[in-house]
Length: 213
Length: 240
Image (tube, rainbow over all chains, first blue to last red; front, top):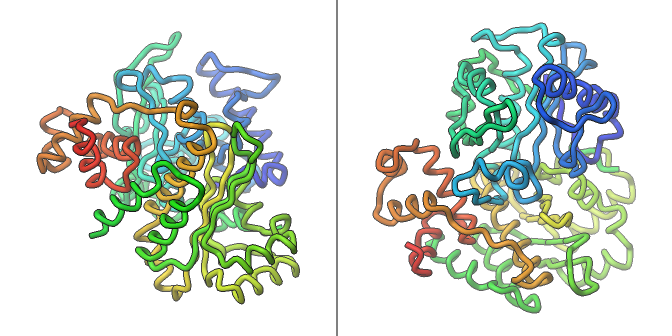
């Protein structure tokens, strides 16, 4: 199940975000050894200050965060334009209202106990489906992301590897590429077929966006 | 037909000057899509002057006056939701209205604001936030169709207007100019030759999806509503 948490309701979901920042540290710092900014038990950076939309994968109890990703509009500061622009052709950036950036896609494989087809964690697939569902609600054309080659292989198993925008580059020990994912019914259908998840993954039809006061 | 109209109205407001072009842009957009009103509110706008707010709308003046005297901006859920979220907000989805908010919406309909509304939050490079709303008196079915067909165009139009407002308040030298890449230029050229995405992909050794990605970015960089308009615009400017 996927929960969307935005700038309006960070306080209502403080425990979820606390778990998410810890999860990100465990995955990106402890396990993958990425050069990320760590503050105590949190992995948190300047892009988290921009009120991103967090996409959280929860276990069945709805209490434990087992995976997450972060969405930022490409019209504002984002990782591809402001940190990893040398992954783009000619280093030329774009800022486009119909394109959002996904970053910090991660799943805690110790916590995520459910599997879907293709030997991929259910949470990993749900996060990707959520990306398309959110993209359709928002009227997006593409989602872009910087991913490493290991991740690209996992996504390929879900028929969702995206397409490369430029050439891979090494950052420390990690080979990264910039990719795009086109938001279309066809792509979502492929992903649903590969994962075997045919229902909407969003909790409560994303009711959180709508409380007036 | 639609392309031609947009070529005209998109060119109408370059640059935005004292709101008149903005009025014409809003009115043309309303007419084209059968909308009731369009309203734009920018907050924390980066500016060399003192104007931090920027308001532009087609609402009736008596409604704007009412809104101001009642200080509705402080209770308007659309402002609050718009400022704090990234997803578009359909007004009919807003739940748990307070009595004061219900009163506001009741009055809004008396002042012909529109039966239905959709608001796009816009987040920019300079920390500014703006909301862009479109309203209509459509039936539920018409509204659903409108959203299904035109959601992305509305987002593009919203951002287009926002960028013009920024250009107006910052001056052109302070705004970021994004240049076309060689690949984007090649995709535009082949489109101008009438090649399909698939053909262009084969010619360039990339997928049709990546052709669409490059064209989408070229479209935006050229300030166009769609690819056809972008190709025309690139030709007019002698870029291809």
